[in-house]
Length: 336
Image (cartoon, rainbow, N blue to C red; front, side, top):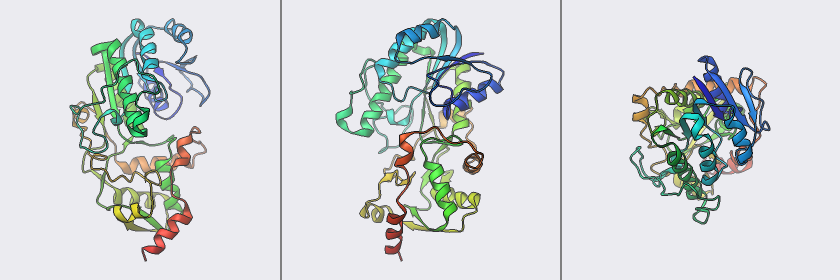
């Protein structure tokens, strides 16, 4: 297989590149070269996805059997549409990594691939949906990008909709924050119900399935851990065990945390009260060969990565995650 990665140098893109090289595939990456170095063994093409000249220069390096697009999160749908239009004649299959945010029902309702997505146009600009808040804006932007890919590639397009992706190289900071917090020990504010199901997936498993679909096509596919397999208590207990922390998990229910002004999703990462946040049906992907490794393995390997000398790509979302220690201490005091 000859494959093109849009991105390819950090987190999911890097995991896709590693997996493709391990399969013996020929790998071309296209990025600006600003965030992280490309892996040895890839053919790196430098350029900006918003520049038609750069895209046309990239196209002259083709053809490819497939493209895997992991770098469109900051692009407006019309920019994705322009890029796919340039690449259509030199690419057979297009795998676009979207998100469950593209569904109108997320995070309030259980989701399947038949759930409605936002009816966003493929030529939408960056402002489309912005007046409706951060969550809807992001969802409409991703749905519009999906429409752009399908509009150009038709049944040669595969859309993947993962939920939360964790693992080595994570730049958002959800799992790294919990690992550092449990390492510190003491009384640890644990959110919600211990038995609350969660469904994060490992970045390496998403990468492997993206390449599988590059060969086989299909989809769209939701990518989430099997429903009911993992819980918040098991996750936090694993973080304690892996880090060797001597902490005590002190559980506080949703209403109590909201009353103390704790922000969902960020101050205590992975905590969300909406009914559909962790109710994503990924059975189609699992039946198609998506392998979702044990969450314990993801936690362990991320901890090893944090201690291995590498650091995540700097990203503003990192600073959004984690509760201030003084605020946590005040809340814990009120739980005594």
